[in-house]
Image (cartoon, rainbow, N blue to C red; front, top):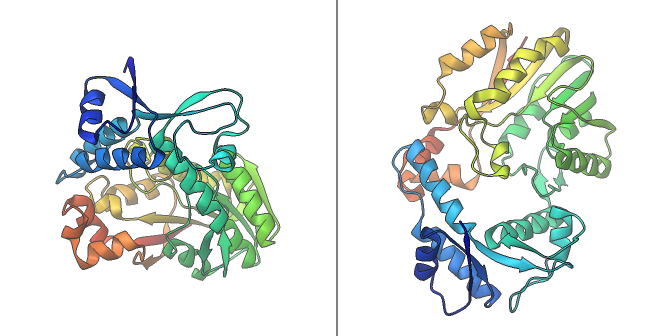
Length: 339
């Protein structure tokens, strides 16, 4: 995209989309709320409708590319150059740090920054902790409670634990409340800061370190909730959900034994959504276990309770009627206990 066009309230979503498809980026200088409506209309026009997951992802990538071509300007104080725009300075500070210069940001991205700020302030209530977890921008929020409950209820052996890929620190907090000495690790500096904030607020003493997968040393329990879908991420935020070619899962399983105390257990939390989408078979997962030298000691299952899963179970056609909706209707989340 080489051309930058300044547009305003006179532009319809159809006209904007035509310009984007011709290779232009669009700088919105009209009313903030009208700009939001234009972006929403472009998203609706390009809503993925493929009947298989590969087609859905390609259409989703096209939608994201088009939507992100609509920009707004932020000045050196992070004020928006659009009428009736909200004060986004606190949200931008959390997402981007201190502003240093004028810049252009995708309006859709800025809406995500605002939403993340609101979610961080509000927090996500976690029944297993009877407390709220406050996600930072760019850190996966624990809005799905079933995997947290699995960790809260699984039988414990040992006194030390590693939480690999800790994210917000929610599983580390659950393990610490269960009396374990926990070290939490993540390779994302945002996640490390987020986990430290949450764990300091919740009270359990947990050491949070920045590490590529495993912290130094060994533990009697190693817990990991990796990205569940082995497909390519479209955006930076997708990396919490998408693990291309199961790379992170494979690396975790291959290295777990080197960090596990004798007689210890690995707890792998994984949805079978990939299996229902045809992206990874159960046999392939079991083969990964076997290659890693780990044996199955048990498994606990839970049916997801988040709204999309419930809607898909009740009426799959309500969620585009595609393979993703059908997979959500069948999805089960499991905690695999490996030794």
